[in-house]
Amino acid sequence: MDTLQPTAPNSATANTEDFLPLLGTDYVEFYVGNAKQAAYYYQSAWGYEVIAYAGPETGVKDRASYVLQQGKIRMVLTASLEPDSIISEHVKKHGDGVKVLALWVDDAEKALAETLKRGAKQYAPLEVKTDADGEVRTASIHTYGDTVHTFVERKNYNGAFMPGYTKMVSKTPVKSVGLKYIDHCVGNVGWGEMNTWVKFYEDVLGFKVIISFDDQDISTEYSALMSKVVANGNEFVKFPINEPAEGKKKSQIEEYLDFYHGPGVQHIAVATDNILETVADLRSRGIEFLQVPDTYYDDLLARVGNIEEDFEEVRRLNILIDRDDQGYLLQLFTKPVEDRPTLFYEIIQRRGARAFGKGNFKALFEAIEREQERRGTL
Image 1 (tube, rainbow, N blue to C red):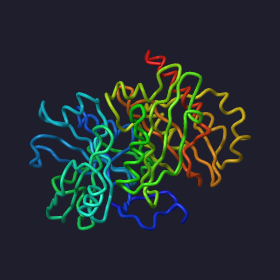
Image 2 (cartoon, rainbow, N blue to C red):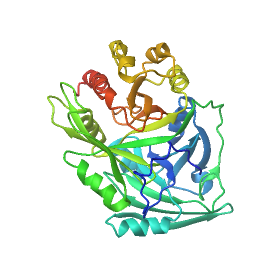
Image 3 (cartoon, rainbow, N blue to C red):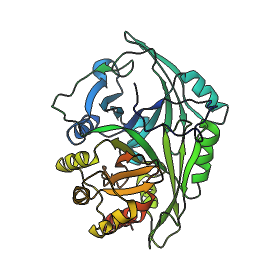
């Protein structure tokens, strides 16, 4: 699948000797308790179209999987049909959550070999899947917690998703909310583990650290975290890695680790070309967002400069803005989309900026802490 990506980095940041060239994010797979109902939620609330299905009707006896797509974003929702399976155990431990961050490659066999010799732990060997539409090759390695990376080679495939799945269309009318591609996926890891996993991405996958935040950058009176952003050579794939930092009270990262029972994907940032329309549409469909105080906007334009968007509409929709030396960005974060306070989404529109909204961290943390206080976990 062709993957729309942000503006290519300058030559100073590009990796010219990339042993693991990545074409983008192929898909994100969630293990869930009820895939059919989850698929309905993502269709009706988020505007994703169902494009493929695997289950008993297609010869798959132990699970049901729905593949959804919007723009260049593709997600797989998988539920177990057995009480004692890897999927069931994952859902029991973590709740609904991300199992697979799949990476689109030209050569899955080489990707597996290159990462294994650099210290990766194999999760699944090379598998060649074929049907009338061609062939897909996959192989998987472990990353933090129970999350895995699957290398997907699909240059010889023309089907809806991959062999084992049948083409499917949504049974109800679906209207897109304007989501285009995955901008980045954020992982939460335990105390003192951030640098370990950053080194893993550097050594095993050839990523580079493109930005770092310490507990002075991301903190409030009560809590803090530390984060480093790693990216592949062309920066098509970006993974911020967070760990808790000492504070007076429990941070959002600690809360996540407690409820998820270990490291995992905290949030997925999805890009839009018109955040005002996207957020207004999502709000009308019942998606809840974190709320920052109206005082956030009092000196905002003095801090970020002129913007192309209608400022009063930005303020009404409670959208956040930040600027770096290459432009500005607009962003907004949902509340957790599961009953456990774990996974959430970020809606982001980049107007040249390559950063991650450092100027908004304090306001966001305070908004998250207000939600933590309501849950009694601050």
